[in-house]
Length: 414
Image (tube, rainbow, N blue to C red):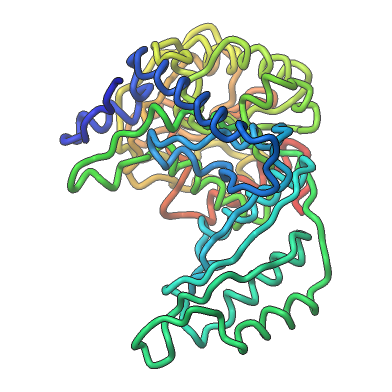
């Protein structure tokens, strides 16, 4: 049985890991597929499962090689009736820009595909006994998404701070009930924009950094989580599609005007062909970060990115921690953010340049110290954004860009 690779101990090794394919050992690849199939067999050995805990989209890639099953498998499994999620109720549940999107993504993915969802909200010691706002938020969420609501155990500090309460208090339960019954019922609807995720990538991009390098662990996966949070905070609806779902039913992309490929660094030819057909049929591609640079086994192959972009050649500029700015004038994608400085020199992604003018691309952003290298640009409905997109500062600039992007693709902001 192959063992995982050790922690990363130098910044140089971390940068190479972030820009690489993850664990590219073929034995490791085969072992992960074996583990995944065994998990499926273990789940499906029963004749019928009324309710089971299921994975959440866009979160598996920060779990390392533990690798939960693809959420797509739960949609089409004939053995599972209801999927279960049981988040804890904390003081900052609905203020946390990343955390608050997790139950939303869970419900939207399964319910819009016809699978019943049950959420059991659990007590957490990080919830102050007198803070009713998070619990009211749970009730509003349940009503607006049509999922119903259940509370399970208190497990929150007592008012005197000497212990924990085994159950929610009458005051807490009353606040939930009143909010639930006073909130109009709603339903989640599909969007015209989708993020494409390959859940198995978490099995390869798992190495953590030691000591001061821990903050760079799961770098590409967290970039996607921040992107998701930015869409949410900008008021932009989106769906999530698993690569397996696309390969099983390529026509699913016909429901969308554009899709985002966020650090989809490994690809295979079948997925590439589906994406090219989508692009050639008028669909938009938003290509971000380390996308299309390796084959499914982790071998370097920029053919995927080159074909997605529709260019003859790309190479790689091994430059990191760069500063860059938007440079184009009078362009709809930069409406309200022209000449904005976007990065503060902390992105660790290499950039894959090409001959932008020859290939017909309009450049929107360039490196400050090396203007011949573009960071953002587009041709037709193909838009590239090669640096890190999970901006830790200047969120309003990126939110404005994303709203412009939706307008560019003809997607109404709901």
